[in-house]
Image 1 (cartoon, each protein chain N blue to C red):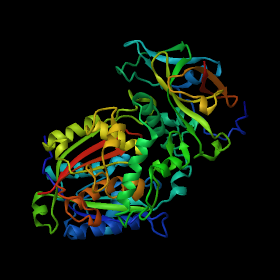
Image 2 (cartoon, rainbow over the protein chains, first blue to last red):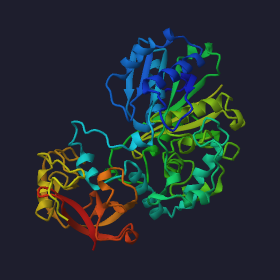
Image 3 (cartoon, chains in turn green, brown):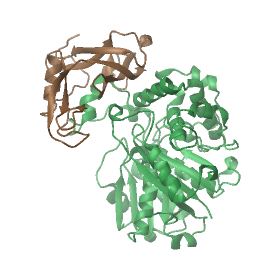
Image 4 (spheres, one colour):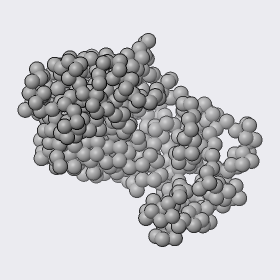
Amino acid sequence: MTLKRAAAITGIGEMKPTRSPDGKSTLGIWTDVARHAILDAGLSIGDIDGLLIGQPITEQAQMWPSILGEYLGIHPKYGNVVDLGGASAAGMVWRAAAAIQSGLANAVLCVTGEASDVETFYAPRARRSAQQLPYREFEVPYGPMGVNSGYALIAARHMHEYGTTSRQLAKIAVHQRTNACANPDALFYGKPLTIDDVLASPLVVDPLHLLEIVRPCTGGAALVVVSPELAKESGNQPVWLLGAGESSRGMMLSQMDSITTSPITQAAPTAFKMAGVSHNDVDLISVYDCYTITVLVTLEDAGFCVKGKGGPFVEEHGFTWRGDMPLNTHGGQLSFGQPGLAGGMSHVTEAVRQLQQRAGDRQVADCEVAFVNGNGGIMSEQVSLLLAVE
Amino acid sequence: MSDTAAQYAKPLPEPSAVSAPFWEGLKAGELRLQRCAACSRYVFYPRSVCPHCLSDRLEWQTVSGRGRVYSYTIVRRAMNPAFAQEVPYIFAIVELEEGPRVTTNLVNCAPEGARVDMPVKAAYDSVTSEIALLKFEPE
């Protein structure tokens, strides 16, 4: 079973993130990015026969595919909410390809995003009926700071096991900020950063500083995954799915064998094997970065460096768009912004942009193969993708 | 530290039929874990089946309450306003001598004094007349 070249991404739409909703609604944002993605792919509304949607973090409803389908005038043969947290967008890409390969659909629209801000994101949410979920019973009474405290526990343990330092982690935020300064759409465009700035920012959850933590904001992104036949008709260069892998573990860190090694160790090799490419073939790394530690653990677990050597590896390489190892060239979510699950989709849309040679001032030279990773929960759900042009 | 339920504003666990013996144990000042009669492994959090072998023969045992800090963080900003007066506080995972890991707070320990691998022992915090939380303190 392979999904290699079973489908291609031909169109993307993405909203420039903003700090607050400014009157926008989640449904309005979805509509806007969906429209742009469909037009970018060179399709009309009647061509879309599949619809995958990411659950908004701050807005709960049922039957989202029906709600958006009705609004846009889409009558999907295949529709789902993909519930993998930050890995949802990457998860949508292979689910769309699988649906296309099996003949369930020809053109699948994938949509993420929400109207949110820091206050809404961190506001206590209304309790619903699932009070007896294990994490509510055995974690919440001890005062976690959302998922921030979970990633802090990973960072602290990684430092203990491998000697990783805050200075090494800070470099990730700094190089991504350099990338954001070449991306006018990034939330932190025009605001360069130094390692000392990161280390001087307040500790929020030790050892993580404020500038190592993603900022929730408003925004959205959509993409269209199409069959090989439709791909050939697109005016855009098709971005082919070469390989995909997915692996998940539980909600609570206390239940994981190791908190410093993630299921990327299963997802990434599956994707590389399906794609038939090696790490040396990768021209762009576009991986989930809710925190600096997320990137470092991802680089290790995806096999770009030896486990535990992520710290020295970060010191040795340049991650800007003109560096030896371009990574998160849109700024990553740390500098682009995290508009709900569209933050995860930004890693896919940026890979598409780079592969199609339309990344503007931050274009990576000779960019033909991209590694994308989506990460959900506290390094629980993992989806790895290899994407390529030609 | 004991508040009445009305005064205690932080989230409280709602014990289920499955987890009730665990919470009853904490109230009585002891740590009780499930142990699987089929594969002999200890289980936490309380479940109706063993996550190692799917057996439903889980038996309650009182255990040492000793362990080591697996990882910890110092929470310096409260997300839930009910914790605003507690910051900075230590949010941690402790690995029990018997194997399972639990999410907890370290108490009677200055934030700067916490260390990964530090030996700790259970401290039963009766936050209401009905609920004691499982916290840990330096041994």
